[in-house]
Image (cartoon, rainbow, N blue to C red; front, side, top):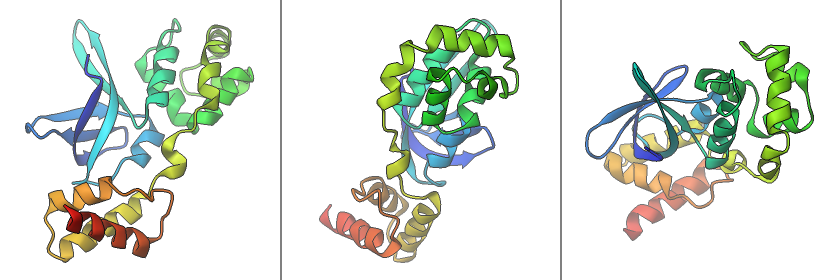
Length: 198
């Protein structure tokens, strides 16, 4: 099982991200919309939690920004009639906590509004998962402590323009501690200190 992939973001599409590992292998990973939005810009390094789905005729990697999203994905595909693509559609509908609240709150209307999920399937999800996912309802996802992708892009460009190498810029941005702060000047100063301390 491929549990995580660490590498450089090559490009993003509407439904997937391409990540190149240090070994030069490029993986295409299908992600929920909200995970894609949290991932850093192209050429930045990232780590993504993955689930390898294997069938006779295909092998597909599904990726998630944090482990709690992966756990919810695993719960969803354990429900009959819910395959990986439907699970990704559910996870792309609303942020993580809203989906958890919809299931634990028996919100059939919300779940059945997801493309491919009818009323009967929505009821089945609630019956089978309502109690199982209570542990996830208290999880705080990193989304509230993530630097905006636009700020990351600005930081990366500024560091490159100063003459630093791409790998130096990527590592500095990946190691920023003050991730709840989107103040460019403060983050840029911190990034410079990280590079100089290496």
